[in-house]
Length: 128
Image (cartoon, rainbow, N blue to C red):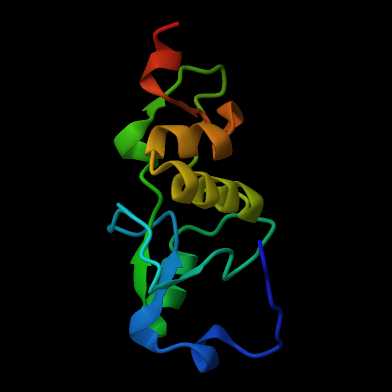
């Protein structure tokens, strides 16, 4: 993958209507990747999780938001801590998106990027 880095803000580089801010708190499910859109991953990096923070940031900037379709394709796995999180690290989101782009399969993409430690598994894994 080719990447360019710049100190400039994505807000200065792309039209607002082309930007989709990925946040696990969005009510919008990412159903497909649009090659004409710019997806912001890890627009806010913080070592602790602050609910709704990325969603508020996107709304303040009048940006479209979306979340990965984890709840649509995965189920909560029973675990000792009763822990379930849709918040992923940047590399996990990248793995999900790049696998989806190559396969056009959300189950394959989510299998590639969502570790079982998040408390979610694909339904066929839960049955085993």
